[in-house]
Image (tube, rainbow, N blue to C red; front, side, top):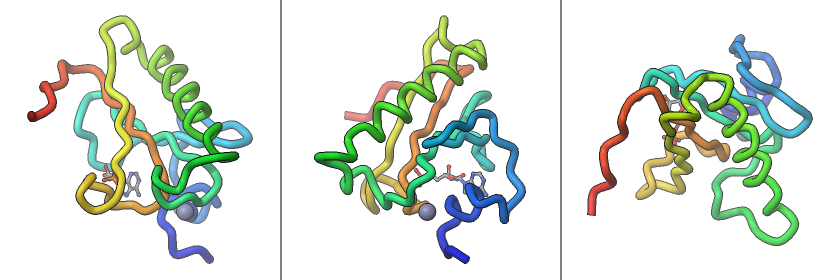
Length: 114
Ligand code: AMP
Ligand code: ZN
């Protein structure tokens, strides 16, 4: 059994409701939501960070973005807007080392600090 939290969720060994899934991507609600809508969009493949992408794997980000946009429409946050975030590494604030995109919506996001 994988020690990776998100691999365990994807494998079904940690019961988690998927709000979206396809061949390459799953999405589920963040356990500690930072906004009314806070969904994690996750590739099924174990890729540690966005820094590991390049060359043949660049399609991963397209798939995550397409899924996030679709979930945003289904969550009715598309008209008012939303924020997509990928944290990378320790200084980027990444705590789970399986690539994921945060979809945040349902409230006005603060401006990014300078
Ligand atoms: P990051 O800090 O970008 O690595 O984001 C990891 C996110 O995973 C955090 O927002 C956590 O709240 C979230 N998280 C941790 N464990 C779970 C879980 N079992 N189910 C859903 N979300 C989780
Ligand atoms: Zn993993």
